[in-house]
Image 1 (spheres, protein in one colour):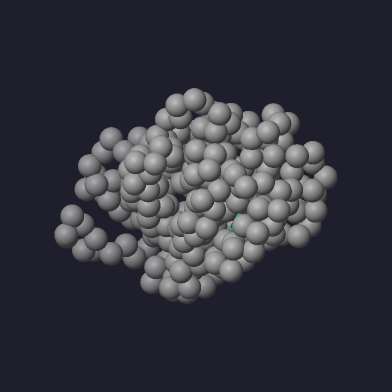
Image 2 (cartoon, rainbow, N blue to C red):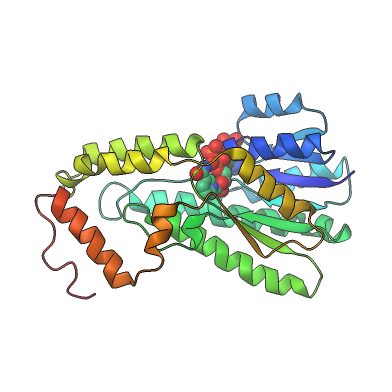
Length: 284
Ligand SMILES: NC(=O)c1ccc[n+]([C@@H]2O[C@H](COP(=O)([O-])OP(=O)(O)OC[C@H]3O[C@@H](n4cnc5c(N)ncnc54)[C@H](OP(=O)(O)O)[C@@H]3O)[C@@H](O)[C@H]2O)c1
């Protein structure tokens, strides 16, 4: 029976993947912190919930002990634990938001892969890191902590992949577009909070709301993501990265030079805001 340590197992996308893996006969060590969801996962055959806070090295080491009580080898580590935020970098509390996202989205994967590596090596297993389209697309305003953390995760992923070529361990990136999960709810709630507390963007943000709502409605079916994760886990030779559910509108921006993308944002700001900065493109 193949074995996997799966973080973010209690989340929207993670739970869907865990269910499919259990159905396909994998033994899944399902990690998360939400006790209710861990109890629900425990009802599935082949799923062993392991309460793990990925920001706490000692907690991850304790999880290792729990997993070792069942097996001495892992065929895969899947890092799906992740947070998002809609945040300004000049108002509110950008410092703690950015730190929190880096702790989970970047350091969480770094620590889990480090602590569980010996078990993975024994089975010549593979590592799957969940990035996002934010890991490769041009950065959007009010999303810096998420874009920064996913870019950092991709840099870590690529460096680790090359390091582990020597040991024959594949390291694979998943780069999902938008899917309806708790993350969608968090963006909508953060948007309202940032809008209510904003000084500089008080005119602009309420007018941007329809655009944000439109973005949140563009969601892909979760089964497509599950299919891709199964491929990354079970393919004899997995690809280096898998994109799934990529936003069509946003990917159009990828073919434009940065200066043109800035002009588009400035046009939107002029259209929606009363006081767009006059010098925004002076350095472009
Ligand atoms: N949904 C999307 O549109 C989308 C798009 C691109 C990429 N992604 C990526 O997909 C992954 C899963 O996201 P999702 O949409 O399923 O979000 P979600 O439903 O909010 O799930 C987030 C998961 O992260 C876990 N987590 C957060 N902080 C943690 C911590 N300190 N320790 C352990 N686990 C922690 C949560 O576990 P607990 O609640 O149990 O702590 C939960 O299982 C994330 O990496 C996300 O960036 C999602």
